[in-house]
Length: 379
Image (cartoon, rainbow, N blue to C red; front, side, top):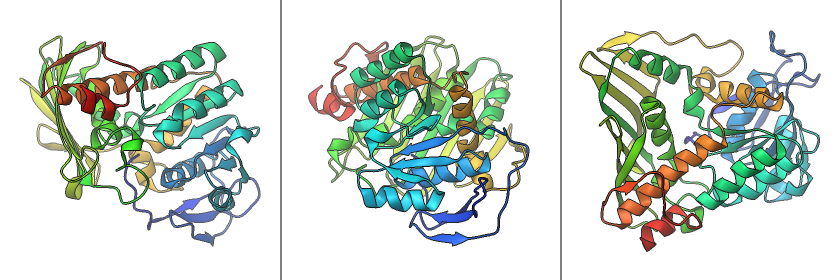
C-alpha cells in the first residue's frame, strides 16, 4: 500500500440516488450536493471491501470516480465495518458473508489473510482485486493462481503503479531508447505509523511491503528480458524487520537494475531512471508525478474531471477499471501470476540477504512455505 495521509479529505460520489460524501481516513463524513459522473458504464461493477483499513479509503475514492458502488464492507471488527460502510453507503458484513452479491471483492486485509480471503471470494463467483504483496509465502501465491484456474474467475494484482498513466508514458518512451544499460529505482519514505507493517507477523519489512512497488516496475521496464539472479542487502536497525533494502537484479541481456527502498527517510521520494546510449528517461512518482526525457519535461496526460487527480496519476482509477473488466470476463495482464512473480523476486532477495549477499538464481528453488522474513533469518 502506498502511504496515504489519512488527514486529507476526498470526495466519494454516490450515483444511486443518495447524497455524495467526503470521506477521510479518520472517518469524518461531510455531506455535499448530489453529483453524477457522466460517460460511464450504465451497469457499473459492484464492489465489496474485504478489509476496512486506510487503503479502503483510497479504493472508495477511486470507485466513486468511475461510479462503482460499494455494496458491502467487512472488517476484523463489526465497529470498523460499520464505520466504513456508513461512509460509503454500504452494508456492514462479516468476512464469511462476502461477496454479498457484489461483482468483485477488494481484498485489503493483512498479507497473511490474502490467500484465504481471495480464494473464498473466487469460489463464491466474484472477481478479486488483491492488495500487494500477493501473499506471505510462495505456497500461498501458488494456491491463489491455482484457484483462478479452477474457478475461472479473475484476480487483478493491486500494483497501482502498473496502471499509472505516467508509468505507461515512461515505458513507451524507454522502448525507443534501444538497449538499456542503466535502471535505478528508489522508494524512500518514513516508516508507517499505523497497521502491523513493522511486526514480524506481517511476513517481512520494507522490501516485502514497500519494495514490491519498485521491483514490479523493474520487471515492467525489463519487459521480456529474463531475470537471471538477485542480490540483496537488508538492514533492520532497531526494528524487528528490515527497514532498509538494496537489491540488484541481473537480466539475461546483461542489464542490471538496482532497487533501493527505505523506511528511514524523513521525506517521501519515489523515482525511476532508465538510460541507454541514446537517451535517459526519468520519472518522479512521489511526492509529485513528473516525467522527463533527456532532461526535458514531458507533459502528463490530462486527468478526468470529478475527482482527486492524484488517484488517476497513482493508477488507482485504471486499476479499478481493470477490475471491472475482469468481472465482465476480461482478465488483466496484471494478474495473480504477475503478483507471484514479484513475490518470487522478494523471496530470492531475502534469501540472498540471509546468505550474506550471495546471488540467488531465478526461478526460485528455495522453500515456498516460508515468509520472506523467515527466509532471511533461516537462510
